[in-house]
Length: 508
Image 1 (cartoon, rainbow, N blue to C red):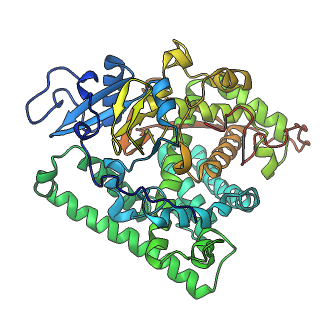
Image 2 (tube, rainbow, N blue to C red):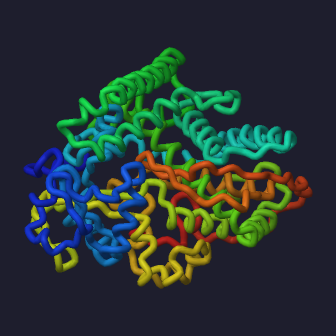
Image 3 (cartoon, one colour):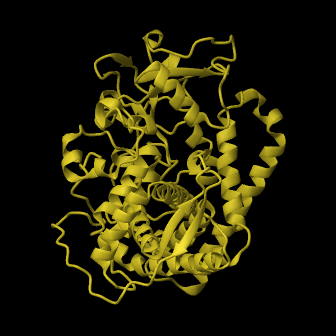
């Protein structure tokens, strides 16, 4: 197993003064308040969008100070490309992610680089996202989407609009629960969110609140919230313990992620995941495996409803490629190239995991300009990286899926599109999420015309991840496609499938 320990690196939170010798050269918001920092005009409920506002004012690298802690933000393409260098930088478990460690521990997303369980779990679970494994998940994704469309058909017949973010959350929770752990939460049979979702949202919201409260005052100011968070964490633990116990009693499943966690030894060392780590990994997958994908689908549905001409073009591709096939096959999903561009453009504007942190493995100079000591870190603000006018054009705020046609992507510099993070610690489930989201969008476009209240203005809610707020769609059922064969579409080897895409660089 590869060595992951970064021996000697400082542990715990490190304010930027400790790692940036020339911090004074990095701009910060005006009107700083002694002790409190940059709190005047700050929006504690929307810290990402708040930071995006400062980014536009202060430029490609800036800093903010809150309650004695200094944070450095990076979003310029040249700086972000340099900080993606795996030889000099590694993942940093930043403050917001560290706040999730009480529930996710050393799971894949929240583990520190020096914790050996990260590499062990990654090597054990990586085959669960291979092409062969993905093909076995496809049928379950279809079945869960069928439950969604049954629900939407009932709502449409009753003349009601649908809660897009709420229903996408149900869809993606059921998908990861069934494909990964053989469990059914019964989300579509409930009038209210499953308690697991409520507990998950509670833990994410609490972790976000901890970022905006002075450390010494948190126990006093968040006493009630802390008790509620403890109850939420206990519920998540009980739920997952029940899943694992059911699997152990049944003697195994169908080779899904849970089977791999319980039964697979590391191919080189023979090590196995401990019972405690299995719990942490299951929670990681259940939370991260549905929260970000549900947000991406919700934003995509918003843009498709807002731009009927783009929806019509995507729907025409679905009709042409899938024909009248009632249940599109696994290979047919990869052929929806324009639908995939819609998804990529959505993730450009609103990457639902909106930032990732990187720390210096050694003393270095970022992009030849800013000295960093070993252990110094910065937060890459992905929505602004994806809006850099020099890379994406002066119309970078405009929704245009053609930014992701092959020619346009090849013309862009590397490391400018990072919705899944970067490097060795990038999201292990990204191809799972992309296949699921492309399949779902194709099925929904084929079945419905999407409408939206003309008065609705996109509002984004933040709970570490991003989600449209208050988005309801009006659906008109389309005629069932005639039973005609799909048009053959040639996809080159290694292209547009679950393991790759011809319009994405390997460094993106």
